[in-house]
Image (cartoon, rainbow, N blue to C red; front, side, top):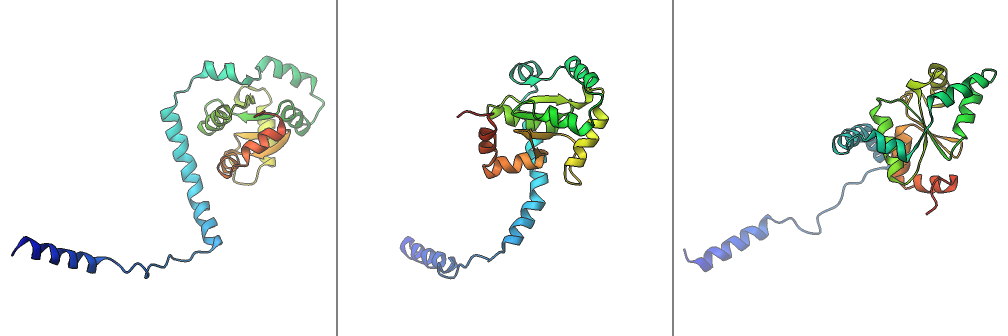
Amino acid sequence: MSERVFAELATIHYQKSLPCRHSFDPPRTTPILHLYIIHLLLPPLIAIVCLCYIAIVPFEEEEERMRMQVVETAAVEEEEAAAAMMSVYERVARMASGNAVVVFSASGCCMCHVVKRLLLGLGVGPAVYELDQLAAAADIQAALSQLLPPGQPPVPVVFVGGRLLGGVEKVMACHINGTLVPLLKQAGALWL
């Protein structure tokens, strides 16, 4: 068979194997299906991002402490002694309104680390309360868990401008939606 005949046969076969370009009709989906898919994919996606982030970015505690205001345990214990008459909710409200961005965290929590790194990456210096280092940690954590929706992990809890933003899922959702930076600007945590 000559090369020319072979080339013509190959061209005809190739054209027959192509679908008609007018026959493609994308499948129709409903917004509820999109929300369901996002609801299923968001938690594993957050976990994957967390694991990748921790594997890629080494934990640099000294640099992190220099860039954000870690509330010292001794100062907090003095405040706790002075605020013994206050209820736990008043104490949490006072702590949350002490800075433009406040993170209630635990030292060994990877999700807390991700939230703190995200805020630092955006240029925010949050006040961080490490609950495992506070004397009244159980009371504060119980009060915070009552503020969060059911099923949310107890830490991290983020307050922006004295108002509860939420846990890691809410912070990541706001970041993905593009609403986190305007919230931070409105609270005075970002100037640009």
